[in-house]
Structure formats: C-alpha cells, structure tokens
Image (cartoon, rainbow, N blue to C red; front, side, top):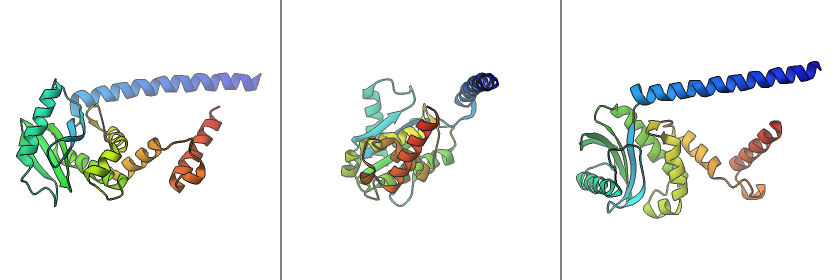
Length: 210
C-alpha cells in the first residue's frame, strides 16, 4: 500500500511539474518572440546561378512564392561580385541586414531585420555554413548538397525555429542532425560508432520508461 501511495504521489508530482514546465516554456517563448529575441527572416542556400538549393522563410514579409523568388534573385545579383569567399560579408538590402558567405558553387545567406544584432546573425550564418561542411564531410558543393538535402533541412531546423535562433554551434547541430537522420532499424554492424551509441541510448531510454 505504501509503495502504491508513493507511486501515485510521484505520478502526480511529475504531472504537476510537467504542466509547470510547459507553461513556463510557453511564457518564455512568448516573451523572447515578442520582445528581445533576434529574429531570422530567412535562411537561403543558392547555387552559382542564384537558383534555390534549400531555403526557409520565417517572416511574412514575402507573402507569395513569386515574392520570395524575386527577393532571392535581386539579393543574388547584388552580392554576386562580392568577395565573400574568404570571409562572411554584410549588406543592407530592402531594409534588411543580410549576412552571406560563398564556397564553391554555393551561396549561404541569413537575413534579419535592420535593427537585429549583426553579430548574432553572423553566428547563425557561420553555424549553418560549418554544420553543412561537417555533414558533407568538407565536400561543400551543389552536387553534394542536392544529394543530402534532407540533412541540410534538418540542419536548418536545428538552427532556427519560427525565426528564433536555437543553436549556432556547428558540432552540436551536426551531431543532432546525424542522430535524427539515423535509421534505427539498421543493423549495428552497418552503423558508425556514434550511431551505434545513439541507438543504444535510445533503446535504454525506451526500456527505462516502459
């Protein structure tokens, strides 16, 4: 009886804490979203002709796909002749701050409002660039990117959510993407050591909470 009573009490406590955590998360998200959090309007990965490889928009500034394509075309034309291959560069475009960096036949862009902190936007750009480099094992070009689009979009999801920057550390981003993209049904013999460890952790977690 005492054991059952303790179990019930523990379950009630867990449920109460879970509700408190959820409520706190909602309040915190509402606060940072509306007041102080740097907001990314879009992240673009274009090829050497200005065509889309992978893009994500987090702002209603561009309400149609044609408007988005026009923005991408104009931004590409404005930045095409810049020297952004050695280091990231910054420009003001359509009342936005745009950080960008080029490698091979890929052009990386992060766009924020004109009042956003350019250093934070630069960190998001560098995190995107470096994590893609890690995931593509240094072969950062259009062909490799197209063959690994699922990883790139997962990468974007780890960096930004609803315009809010979540993570800029490339190692953390690439690690999460690698785990999320892993096939848990694959035999351990076909997985890397890191993947095997992740699979083992997942199985252990499931066992503990059954």
